[in-house]
Structure formats: structure tokens, C-alpha cells
Length: 387
Ligand SMILES: Nc1ncnc2c1ncn2[C@@H]1O[C@H](COP(=O)(O)OP(=O)(O)OP(=O)(O)O)[C@@H](O)[C@H]1O
Ligand SMILES: [Mg+2]
Image (cartoon, rainbow, N blue to C red; front, side, top):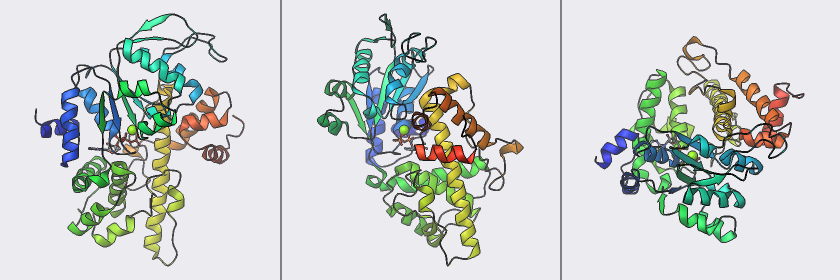
């Protein structure tokens, strides 16, 4: 298979030398069982690469489980990964399998590995080297066959130097270290991303798409994209939703360009999208819609983080809708005429998280991937004070 064919098969966009080199390495290491460390800023495509490695491996038809180590409270990460015995700690009313057992035979993607507490790192190193581990509260050794792919957007070098990350684990993980460069270091990929994201998004949501002018593409290509590919994708999708078939020229493109970091940080988003005065009603309206869309999108990110990070999907068996905000018709319509009711789902998940952490709101917020402040706001909004 050529590099292009591989990229096509796994949907990896990029013509830059840097990306092609990453893909060439991926093709070499995928079929082996070697542990891989993928590093790079937020939104550069670490998970895309991890999935391609799994998809091209001998474990392609086995489980791929992603765990965001940064989103799981320190105290429970170890039991989430390795499971626990009944009675191992307060609240452990029954024994439970951890991700390593669940993933046996498959590939475990450990995202934000730099946030893993040191004692858990010791256990991780052991399971990578020998396949052996013990459930929390148990002294019986178990054995699994799991391939580990780790990712980090922190420099693990620096974490090691500060004493937050074990050097032996770093060396072990880094036997193959794939560094994905930030988008601003491979600008030649930007026009391709714009094309791919606008085609995919408009087709999937049946929205007319008027195309970008060359100038508009040049403007977007010149930006620094601190949130990398994710930020670019979000921006392209907003433009398509709100422009509805209009051609996007330089003037239109400029209107959507966020102030520094706006599309990057979900917490900051609404603050950075002020409805400015001195605009036509149409422009103000557009900004209001954009703001509403962003809030919905952030909510979806919150839900997704919760489901992915905490394995709640195992407990709650909740479906994860891809586009619950249903952009099939006009903004605000429901998808395929079905009411997906995001608010109900959110309430449900908030209650579940608070229950899971026995009323500890800051742990619940952490698990939901939102700030405690946001959680309190939502509790007030939804009148969930008494849960
Ligand atoms: N090379 C690529 N080809 C196609 N899509 C990409 C590529 N890189 C990133 N994307 C898209 O950009 C978004 C972000 O990618 P991904 O989730 O893999 O980033 P990440 O590095 O894991 O980010 P984070 O550090 O925030 O977890 C996803 O929607 C992904 O599909
Ligand atoms: Mg990721």
C-alpha cells in the first residue's frame, strides 16, 4: 500500500512532508505490537493516528478503547484502568473489571498520559512489560494481552524533568515516538482540510455549500490555529451552517475568524463571541446563532468526554448521537424529525455523575469535563439543586 492509499483508507488528510513521514512510520509500526507514544498539541490529530494504527494492526477487528486519563479523577483512575475487588474502598460494593481486562486482545488508547499519577504509572509500566496487573484491593495477579497507544499534549520530557512522570515509563512508551506537528508548521495541509471538512459536513447534513474563494482560503491558511485541526474543522462547519450556500469570500471569512483562542477553549467560547454594537440586525442575528451553536457544540463535547472518559456508557448504555443538534434542515430543527432533547440527556448525565461521586460536585464536574462553576450553573439552570 502506498502512503496515499493508506491515508485514503484511514481518512488521514495531509500532503505535507511532516504528515507523510508520520503516516509512513505508522504503516511500519502498525502491524507490530510495539507500544507507541503520540505527542502533539491539542487537536493535531493524535486520536486519528491512534485509530489508524489500530485499524492497520493485527488487532483491527478487536476492541479499541480510548481512555482520557486527564478527565478521570486521580483517585479513581487506577481502579478504572485495572478494576477493583469488592470492598477495596468505600463504595466498591461489587467487583468490577477495569479497562485493561475489558480491552483484552485489543488496543487501549491512553490519552493525556502526562496526567497519570505516579503510582498508577508504576502499574502501567508493569502491565506493558509483562501483561500482568492486579485489581485494586486484590493480591491475585492477572494477565492480559493489550497493546497500548499513549498520547500526550504535554511535553513528557519536561514532565520527567519536573519529576511528575517516571523516566522508565517514558523510555518504555517512547520506543516509537510519533510527533504530530501543529497545523501552523504544515500550512500546505490547510486548504485540503478546508475542502474535506466542507464537503463532508455539507453532504452529511444536506446543507448547500457555495465554496470558498481562493482569497478566503489564503486568509485561513495564514492563521496560526492554536487549536489546530479541531479548531479549523469547527470554523469550517460554522461557516457552512451559517452561510447556507453563499460563496465564502475574504470578507465573509474574516467575519468568522475568532479572536485569539476563541474556538480553542470551550470555557472561553461564549465570552469571546460578543454581539458587538454597530452591526446590522442580520449580522447580530448571525452572531447570536453562532453563539448558540457553540454552546450546543460545547455541551456535546462535555457529553462525549463524560461518556468516553468514565466508561459510563457501560453502566448507562447510552447511545452517543453524532449530531444531536440535527443540522438537517434549519438550525434548531431536530434530526430526522426525532426529538433528541439534549437538555434531558444532559440532566441525566449530570445526575449520574453526581450520584457516581456521591454528591461530590467537584469530582462530578471533573468527570463531566466541565468546570465546577459550569456544573453549578447547570444545576441552577436545570433546577437540579437537590440531587
Ligand atoms: N490528518 C487528519 N485528517 C483528517 N482529520 C483530522 C486529521 N487530524 C485531525 N483531524 C480531525 O480533527 C479533530 C481533532 O483530531 P483528534 O481528536 O485526533 O486530535 P487530538 O490530537 O487527539 O486532540 P486532543 O489533544 O485535544 O485530544 C478530529 O475531528 C479529527 O477527525
Ligand atoms: Mg485526543
